[in-house]
Length: 465
Image (cartoon, rainbow, N blue to C red; front, side):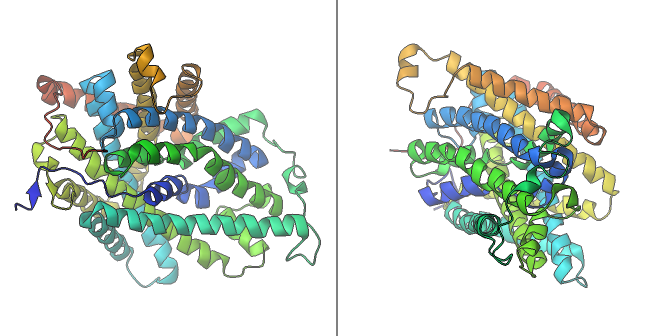
């Protein structure tokens, strides 16, 4: 049998894989390191920022879930944008997301190199970057089941770390464990300038950083084409988003800021400060390990996403059909090899080009993430409007509060883009992101418009029966 065949993807992702992938994508480097900057902007009220932004992210996931359950394909939101907003929207959504993860993966392997350098300062950073990149690509090339297993354990490490912080922290706050039996209480939440020291403005300024921390959660939708039982596992994973946000984001930040004054936080990880306050002397090494794991997890998920998205684009005649073939194990090897080549080039440029070039690219990717969520909401609005009442009544996973919730989430995403345009540090990212979207639109009209985005079914999606 020819190694490359048209049988498409395999439904080998189990329920526990989907649950932990959904859980892990909600917990990234942005929480372990990036939360420090958000705390500086909003103080203890950063918990409100995580809660409000998380609520709207949940709405985005419900919008995506509604479409995924109706039509569970690996192309996910790019396919839905194609179907409900038009071929150009599918093209822009797909290639924007592919580029977003190429840049994000570069940032993640660079982070791995930096943090491995803490333990092995004599080893050249590019060696760690290349090694981690090769490892993640190798995992993805084996099978989707292998990808799911690695992502399961990567996610479990992050979950256990945060649960450990919350449990031991509550022991100190409530019972004084580790503080000679003297409960610390939660007075730090208001004793240093109040709960909202920088006012409502500080909370709003933190929205853009907090929102980015949730980036990657939409991968749940991409797994729909390879989930064993997408009509049950996808809704279950999405329904758990609210408690995940409450526990792992709001809960962790609550414990951190109760133990450690918000205005005493440095530029490093607030998790390190808190674990050290709990008497764990090896906190820096522990968090260093977890951050490396989080970065590898993000890179692993990103490589998976690029392969599936490129497959979907070939299916829509919006990428060369060469990349649409899969191996006997249901792996889009050609698509993944293109991702590998682009990442290799990116790693080389990372150590040759000026640092600002990659700051700009990362800013473009950050803008692209919000663009993805906006397109998900727009596609869901069009999808829902196209249903007749009997289809709505029989819909297995309906958006709660429709249509107000969809429009409210859309308004929030536009609001965050407005904040980014207002802030000097992120304004360039909005401008560059807009130029990138204009470029993609131009490519579509000059190269792919004549193809009319007709689905060619070069890749089949396995039955969910």
